[in-house]
Image 1: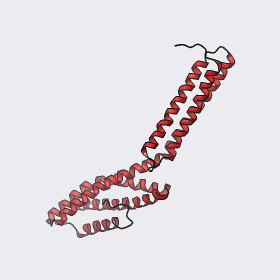
Image 2: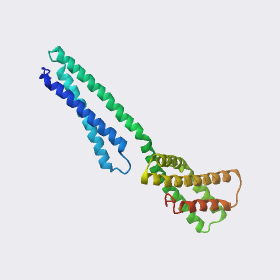
Image 3: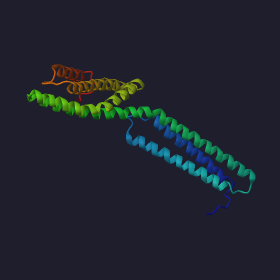
Image 4: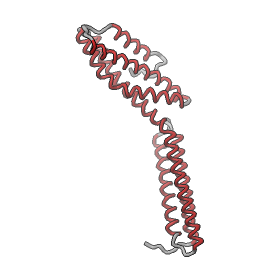
Length: 244
C-alpha cells in the first residue's frame, strides 16, 4: 500500500467532502423516516433510504481516506489540522447517527400502529370466515347438539384472534390521536370496528365459559341475539369495514 504523503490540500478536501456527504446522507435518511407515511410510494421511500445510506457510506469512506492520507504528512501543523478535521468528522458521524436513531424512534410508534392495524384486518378476515361457516350451519337447520358444537367450534377458532384484534384497536387509537386528514378519519372508523370485533371475542369467551361450566341441551337465544347485534353495528353505514 502506498502511504506517500499526499498534496497538502487533497486530504483536507477529502475530509470536507466526506463531511458534506455524511451530513447530506444523514439528512435524507432522517427526513425520510420522519416524513414517510403509508401513502408514500414504497419504491420512492426505499430509494430515498438507499440513497441516504449510500451517501453516509461515501462520506465515512472519504473522511477515513482523508485522515489516512493526511496523518503521514511531514508538516506537524498540517497533521494537526488533519486530526482536527478527523475529530470534526467523528463528531458529525455521532450527530448523524443520533439524528437517524431519533427519527426512527420518533416514527416507530406510527409504523407499529400501521402494522397492528394491518394484522388486525387480516385477523378480521379470519373472523369473517368463522362467522360465515357458523351462519351456514345455522341456516341448514341443525339439531340442538349440532348447533352447540358449531358455537363451540366457532369460539375455539375465534378466541385466538383476540390478541391481534386488541393490538389493532391500540394501533387504530394511536393513529386516530396522532394522525390527520383521511388517515385520522380511517383510524377512527378502524377503532370502532376493532372495538366491535373485541365485543365478538367477549361473546365467544362467554360461550366457551358457559359451555364449560354448565350442561346445555341447546344454545341460549341471547348468544344469537348478541351476535346479530354486533353484526348489525359492524354493518352500519359508519362502520369501519364490511369485512365481517
